[in-house]
Length: 282
Length: 219
Image (tube, rainbow over all chains, first blue to last red; front, side):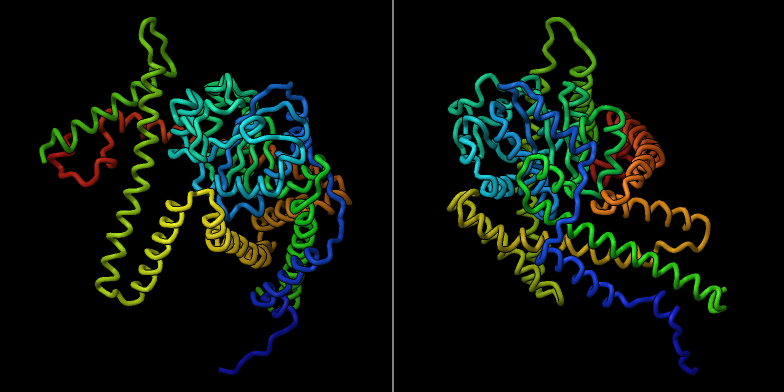
């Protein structure tokens, strides 16, 4: 059987994956090395998130779940960092963090090193604390909602919770004005709705991976989540907070790679119809 | 083991635990404190989950230790590597503390980097997949192409900034078709979970008890 020569439509319709991968690598490396500074519009969800924290009265306590894993850190880490900047800059808020992900404590250390709370005059145990990784996911959420001290008596370094001023008068979900969850898992993002919003009506801000957003949308539309954002929107939060960093840098990469995908879709369809109308496809 | 130990007692424990949490959420009886009992049982759950993490590690040692001792072809070097990594992380974590610079370095330099790399590699498959899948071959794939094109364009910050009408189009797609379909899936799954919960509670669902004979399953 003789080998048929490929037409231009055949070649465009079936570009080898190695070529696609090569183009993709160049497309995302270039804006990382040479930032373009594409405009980044602020979406209503990010603005709502920012406004909610901005309007919290002094003395409000916030429960923060570092529920993401290392794989999701490049997407969710910049969002968590930007929000902490906002909380610390505003001041007068109590940021109490726990982790429903086993890697959460290590990723929290990483975030704190990036933020440097001391630049805002914030102190561990006074303005912020981490009470550690608590196993059980939804069981942990339910238990902490009922009583933090019945669940754990120490922070994640092993020091007694009662030795920290931030924990004065804080023990259950009723003591919190806001719940924030950063997660790569549906168990966590949906679990907090079931265990805290449904039971205690705690206002809930949720940041998830971009691909998880459709599964969480019904909760936001039902009013159970104040604002649902994806980690890919971290650049917008950084602009609002005035701390451009990793998120805004990745916004250029997101724009470039999405444009590449759109171009590839157009090329693929032109090739498909070109082949069809030139008689090469039934 | 008798039916009493393998079936009746576990089902009784599940029934009573589920009943406690139902009462705690739905019922208030003066003089009966469901909340503090539920708190205790919740904490038992956390302790049990922590125990299963340790139990899982022991199970890994038994499973992979067997592969190493039998020199299972194509498997034993990976099993050995896995056990070396578990031991290394455990020794460093226990001796220096989980927030020590040594443990953090170990995590950041190995697991974190690998985990982020593996997740990032999805981008390559997705690009190739989008190029091949979004073709207007018929009406259904044409619709998928239009929706995919709008959402892709919306998610690129610069395109949304340069062509603002794309924002309400994508918002409508998220708010109406996506949310409607997702709600249907969620409500269906929730009803299924509810039915499964009730069946488990009354002992009609015995999957969680492991392998039972027909006589042990009862009726």
